[in-house]
Length: 460
Image (cartoon, rainbow, N blue to C red; front, top):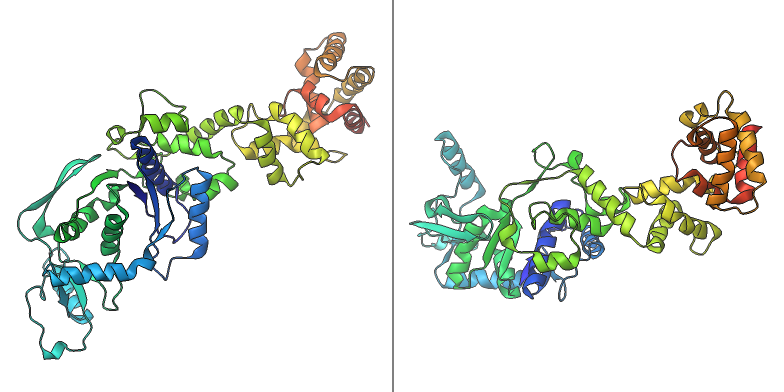
């Protein structure tokens, strides 16, 4: 049983998406269950739009979870119940230290260059009448002697001296549970057997282990995966591509299978395999193949991988995605034209955005807006050459790419020019740009009337 437990304080981060993917794949590989828990105890920062963004991102990536979504805030009474059980067992205690006392304690520790940690002043102290009605927090009575070792599936055996762990707060003075308590209780109650998460939580595992052992609960198997870094080795940030999953879909035009495949290869591998389907990933994924070093995010590699999946994608599916981006109605003439053009538009594209941009020439109104680079191709004798090409095309009965190419080849031979020298001004005149699908495919897609009219505009 694995789980993904994001905090709904923003979008589904790309690093969180990889954590979710690893949990999903391991559960499916082992024939277990993959659970989703929304850790919304931070009421000031948790928002409904963020929850919806997380669920939407998970759905888009095809990371279908088992059962209902668990919302941590709704389980606050259960968390408090466990805190009371720890109090009753003598494994926790009430701490009446005031904010001023704690600040004075920390100031003294700073002055003495000591670690900033709670000094246990209420650990073995008996409450008196003066504490009646006073606010208190509940703290775990952590082990002080010996050491704790976690046999992590990724990091290996990691040991911490118990003296380094302080008596952490379980319940705040208002009775609300802390993150550390809530996570442990929820994982236990949900039956989570494997906790797969970022290695920034590794230190938390030692503190959480104190709760688990005090309650006599089974210890989960931990796997703390290294975080993702930027291509320069620095902590991943927006400048590296640390965006929400929705940005990869909506703003960057990526396909979910490409994002999944790329995230899978960030810190995990199976031999030299680069293109890995969902079915293969489930069959192959194991924690032993997760590396200990931080993975480096490379947007160019993701774009190249996306290009592969675009070429493999169904044309109808891509047409729907591009039509939505450029505002074409399903069933319209433009939609049908876009669908017919898709085999010619997708081979060189690396994103849905590039396909949409490449399709622009199909829907431009006459006279075309010609960009600066294309305009240079229409200078000098180019328009005379266009006139000869237009006359040759007008005489073609079979308006198909092969027949159109044959006609233009004759024009090029008569002008003693290579075919490209004729194709370049043709492309500029027909699309207004210097790049497009093959020029004879462009002619075939635009049709006789539109093609000849566009050429006529530039000749004039």
